[in-house]
Image (tube, rainbow, N blue to C red; front, top):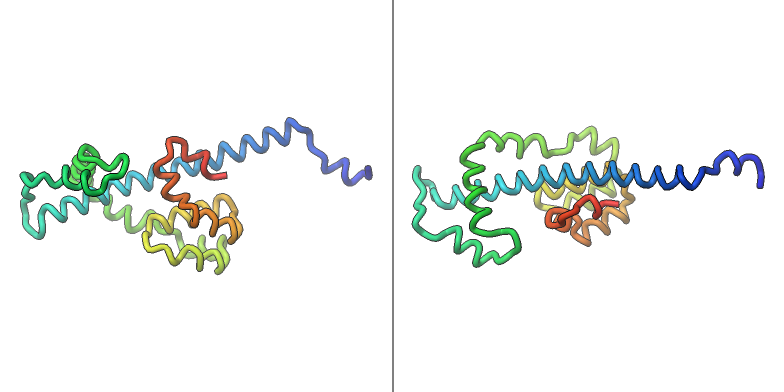
Amino acid sequence: RNKAMEEKTISFDKLMNSIKEINARAGGMAKSVVNQLMTLRNWAIGYYIVEYEQGGKDKAEYGTNLLKNLEKQISEKGLNETLFRVCRQFYLTYPQIHSTVSNEFVTRPDVLVQNLSFSHIREIMVIDDSFERFFYETECIKCNWSVRELRRQIKTNLYVRAGISKKPELLVQ
C-alpha cells in the first residue's frame, strides 16, 4: 500500500456512521416534504369537493351522499368519506392556504438552474401535477440524483409510494 491510499482509508465505524447520518438526513427531509405534500393534497381535495358542491352557488347541497359516493367510486385505500369530510372542513377553515399552494411549492428558477441540468428538467417537466413536479425537483436536488436515477424514481412512482408508505423516509436512498 502506498502512503496516499493509507491517508484516504477510513475506519469501518466512520463509514457506518457516515451512511447512517446521510440516511437519517435524507429520510427526515423526505418525510417533511411528503407531509407537506399530503397536507396540500388534503386541502386541494377539500377545495374540489366544495367547488363541486357549490356548483357556482353560494350554499352547498349536503343531502346528496356525495362523500359516500366518492369513496365508493374512487375505491382507493385511505380515500374515504371521513377523509373527504375532514378535507372539506380543512379547506373551509383555511382558505388562505391557496397562496401557499401557488407560491411556496414552486422551486425558484435560480435553484433549478443552479442544481439541475437541462436533462433533469426535461425529465421532470413532462409531469403535469405541480406538486409532483416540485417533489421530484426537491428530491433530485437533495439526493443529487443522476438523470438515470431521476428517471428510475419517476418510472417507479416514488411520489405515489412515498405518499402511501408508512415509512416514506425508507423509500429515498
